[in-house]
Image 1 (spheres, helix red, strand yellow):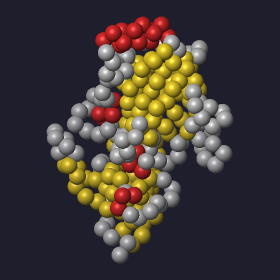
Image 2 (cartoon, one colour):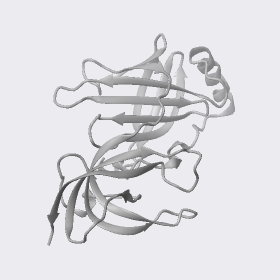
Image 3 (cartoon, rainbow, N blue to C red):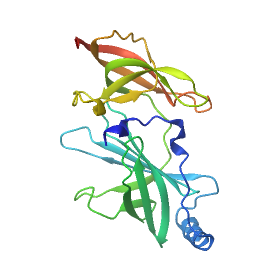
Image 4 (cartoon, rainbow, N blue to C red):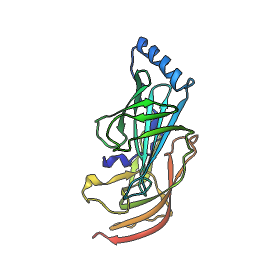
Length: 239
């Protein structure tokens, strides 16, 4: 699950639609319209805040689109990026929603399958993954993207190719969170954006506090976020 931290892609919502037969799709659509009342080309958003004894807790948001795309974000309300999962949803029976998801950037093809029941403007999770208190997602207005402070460990700087049409950009080998994890190569992610105000010196390991700021989605050929340095928390020689 380490690679789920790479999750700022403008293409995250471009997932494949659920492939149902025309007959079944029509039947499911009737159920969906009667339960969620989703107009054509729109979506419904559901959210829950879960407390935790040893951490600030987590905020879970689930977006269900008319074309059967699904996006779930889990924000642990700390100095790490959100986990983003994408997939699709279906209505196998009245008042029941089947959501199948994979974690963006994790490299893990295993799918998470969640079953919800529709109950008075909310989706109640059917299962034991969320403990004795369970999980109930309430229908809400989807919040606008907001800035977030992250703790970023930087051990190397490079120039990375962002793909056709995007060109090259400054990038870093990074980890996120207050404590550094294992130093093995597969423990490090790529941050495919420069950090404004930060100058990397080779042979050093940095612990930074940065501000991740959402970009206007109308701007093309750029990442979803820009990053600005708030503070260099530590700087250590590595050799």
